[in-house]
Image 1 (cartoon, one colour):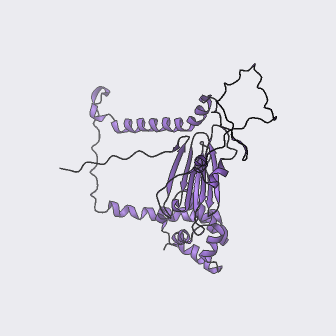
Image 2: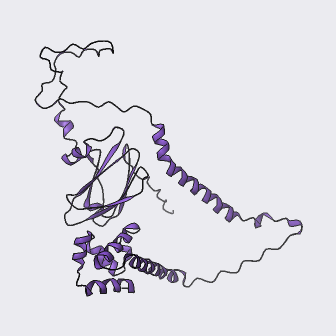
Image 3: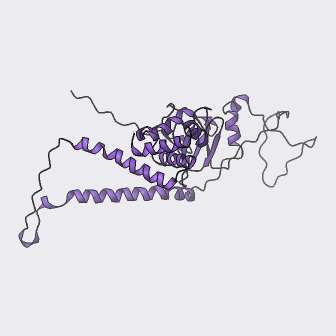
Length: 309
């Protein structure tokens, strides 16, 4: 355990605060808090999750959040530097590169052209263009989608009987539709049980009032003892974080893309447009899910190298 973790544990014990107290208040699992005190940073989700854990810990114990976060960043850098000497140990010092020889007339042979620098510059240009295209893709897609929204089927309230007889032709704009004898509007067919069974009650509630042209992603905690942290980005907007424990849930609506990074995928149920998404992974497994309007996007498979003959 390093000096950073020792200070956290010492300050907590001086105030007679247990890890369970911090977990109950911050909704951070005791396993994550213990890994923070023992400086086992590789057991944490990483990135913004770790910084959020440090701030929540310091706030509950009564420490300065900014100073504690600075101490964590320093400890994180030291833990990474400890790996470097072991990697480079035993390697011979590289031989000094020969100094270039000046040529008459200012001409340089092809071997002295800095091909490595040119390749690096080309790579930076490609990365910059890819980043620009990614951040401008969402506004361009919104401008280009001018197609009308598909018509939705209306259903009659329970108790009304479906209309019988052959279907009649749709009236033209100038025609007048005759009213029925009893003064009631013709009823529409009642939706079948098979269609209604495709979505769960939770998903049906999430779909209520969804604007046309959007899709819905619902996140729901499935374990009262295990919390799940998630970072969410919808249509390129700034990311936001949620912490879910059963039966809490979060509904996200978007037109183009939703990216969800879950800190414990085993403690989370995910629904897309009312249908549950089958997921693989247990408690503590960090997983990133990307949704478009056609559903969950599957990452491409990595090619498997052929075995040597």
